[in-house]
Image 1 (tube, protein in one colour):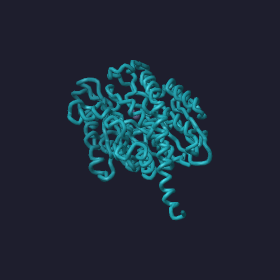
Image 2: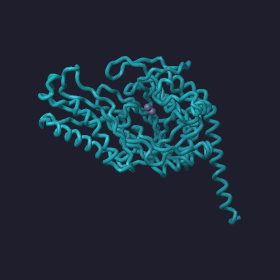
Image 3: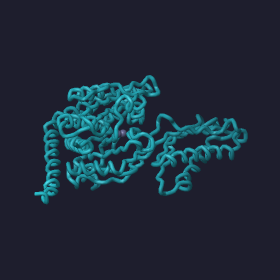
Image 4: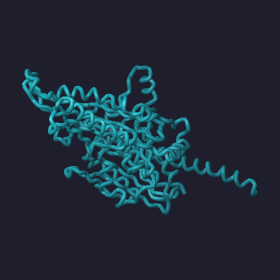
Length: 446
Ligand SMILES: [Zn+2]
Ligand SMILES: [Zn+2]
């Protein structure tokens, strides 16, 4: 008997896991039509960042009805006009690890052009008071609905896990200040501090039914930087009495191209983009100053700091070479609000979540993707120096036929943030809930 015991034990574990996965799949299938209806409701009523009032209320109401301890209005911004619409739902289920799962809730000022029956026709005032169209063009409606589905599965299978589960609805991801607003309002002091944090994001070029992971650095930090090149104004016919900021700005744009190519190691990926340049009012006037708006992307924070220092040094050097007086030196300012850190998917956590999802949806449906220089504010929830292991996986959201057509060159796929983007909602939601539930059940397993 003794001899056979290890065999019995080894055999018993996959059977249990298999039975649990069957339960999850059948629960999700029972819920799917209700989840699709919820998805369409949220999709048709998108809300801009800092204004997620109805979306957060809907999420809070569902989570509360399944026994979660829900707190609303979590989030404090530096701007007192913005309300924090963060939702924190806690389910305590005995001793064990604490896991946080995040879904972002905000939509974008994009006009929907999908022509779908449940397309958004919403218009709203943005923070500057302008009337803008609003659309869930980044799929955050998929994220909220997946969180609702996952919450139901975990509440129904409470006897299969232990520990503390925290589900959060995060506002203002698109403005990258929502995660920080929740932390500033006591996310980790008023509520249990997690041992891990995980999230998903839909993907506009991957098949629905599949998920992707990227161990290690996956997304870049993003820093918005404003540069004012100051000179001395003059009549356009009298360059000798000017310090021409337009010529200096032109030199600056070219000079900073060598920061990445000559100052950085090729093994430290970085991007320096000048996204906007404005100066002057008329043909025959040399203006006083020129404004530039830059975006910097890096993985490592020391690289980010070195690039900011180089941008300051080169701006000053060009001003000195141009004979600009000391009191008119350029101003280089990194935004303190439009900033996010890079996303480092903890390799061990990523491997664990990936294998849990592989067992749930099949090995062939879990792939590895290379990193990108795009950005997210989810990594703030990992705190500085990767104190809390985090990971985010990509959720395929597109019909296989559309992917095939795009690969043939017949119909290019609209990217996220496009007014033409639409997910194959049913298989995407099904996979999103099954994958996230599998990850949670593994991280909080008994
Ligand atoms: Zn987005
Ligand atoms: Zn997004």
